[in-house]
Image (tube, rainbow, N blue to C red; front, side, top):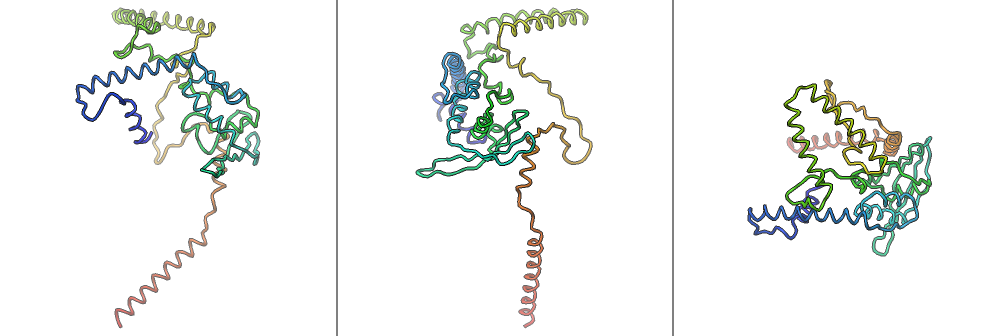
Length: 317
């Protein structure tokens, strides 16, 4: 996010609460009101996502997959890509094993004229992996219209989970919504009431455990792990959606110390489709013209000697 976008988001956050003559004391009170309004908007948006459905523009199962799991706000962005997909056309360029390269032409209306924009889309049929040169998924986290058009051409009906991000899913419970705050009405949320009650009991249990021996503490932790595993299995059997922490929690390790000079060598597993894209970018670059470079240097040297001779002639004339 650049400086302009950050400034616009801050202005939208304080819109209607803060003005140029607001004092420091008024700012603290209005900041709390702005937070309360933000929570109310998020609660209303969650309610709309579960009780109001935005119709699909197409009969594709790909769009249906996003409609079921994404919030309404994010699905509108995906919905827009499916609408713009109608103005695209593609052609198959080449295939290297399981990876196919497509040239997608997008027709953009500028006034009364249509402008053609060309993009390259790489599709790995074995791993159902797609990559476009517009890099919309890498920047905004949603598949672009060019990739969707290629997926429709290849008759892909179900996307891998790596293209359906957890941060915009409506079927995942957010742990922060259970935490009591000064600008939230906890009485309206029964899950937050239960969370607050259990947390208070665990604080008392934590105080008792800290006064016992290490063996008693290990016994307590073992029993807690057994209860967690039992309840997790029961929730999965009953279809209760997981939380963000339990569904996407990964252990982050510190990088290894590099003793050699220069940039450390990466050990990240590179996908096959990334290798093909890099190879294609290298081959598309124009070759370096060494003869032109040598000729330019000779011209610079000759110009220097001509200037030097004229200078000496004027000096001793």
